[in-house]
Amino acid sequence: MSPNNEIDLPLHGIRVVEFTHMVMGPTCGMTLGDMGADVIKVEPLSGDSTRKLLGVGAGFYPLFNRNKKSIALDLQSARGREVVLRLIATADIVSENFKAETMQKLGLDYASLSARDPRLIYVSHKGFLPGPYDHRTALDEVVQMMGGLAYMTGRPGDPLRAGSSVNDIMGGLFGAMGAMAALMQRAQTGRGQEVQAALFENNVFLVAQHMLQFAVTGQAAAPMPERISPWGIYDVFSVKDGAQIFLAVVGDTQWRVFCEAFGFNDLFADPRLVSNNDRVRARDWMMPLLRARLAAREAGELAQVFEREGLPFAPITDPQHLFADPHLQATGGLAPMTLPDGRDTATPLLPLTLAGQRLGVRLNPPRLGEHGRQLLESLAYSNKEIDALVTDGVLLAP
Image 1 (tube, rainbow, N blue to C red):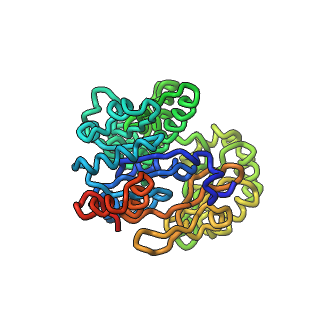
Image 2: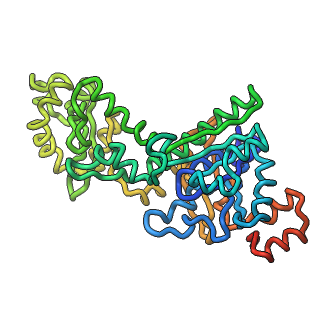
Image 3: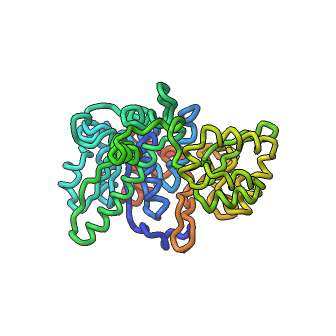
């Protein structure tokens, strides 16, 4: 299978029409598109608002909208809705992440569309699954705060959101997973269904390990900066020239290897440090001692020793430096891509292989309305009809 040969991809022949913005919905479409689906992004004439975001949002559009086509329509007009209904008639999946009332007013909700085509699969990305909270407006940070993740990430009294749009991204992945499950079930039953994924429930799944920790131990989980580590050594060390490195020694065999590698025979012989649990209980005095012994070493030297001995370690890396990561470059984890403004860059791919191949970039993130004319021609619109839609402000076809 070639990552650039669409016909070899598992979702080749599946068409997705998406009405999405921000991160969650677009992640679902990106995932399906990476796997070979023909994903058509329906945008308002002004475009997906994430095209214009600044700061931490500047990467949203180019990352989550590769392998898609763009059509820009005025869905408030009857002619725009006619176009999109003809487009949906060719689709297997509709994906959206707008308010339910928005889709209902446009006649693009599941009930309306499934009445036209019972085989249609409809993926709805929301803040909450149906229940007491489903009227609320949710954002990733909102559900991180109310769902325990910000509490677990920050220090006591200082809740802190995770450093990525974790719920949006995972929520979109679960939406894609549900869509693929619905495709498999449709192959057996001949009928489509509605799939729902939600930010809050996704967040609860992320902190479920801490919920179950309480169920097992009867003790509330401490925030990660204050947690009781299950391992004797599992820490960031400050070393020579102000550098930092993460080092871990997570078992008794690794403890022996670590002590031998660094000549810490006294620590290995210390009866207070025999088992991992002994070392966890001894952290108050053991860790300052280890920090002092390793402080004069270079981070690169420590990394070489840990890598040679098969011990876990990690440099502390800023995201922008990952473009130059030798592993990502050597394994095809980054693919060349052209931004909508014409600049070339690289982008990380889905973290999986199929038949030993990464799933690549077949289509660059589209310019607004880039494929509108092409798509309408495929729906048997004449050039005259398309020109009239453009002239009347219903279709943007640059």
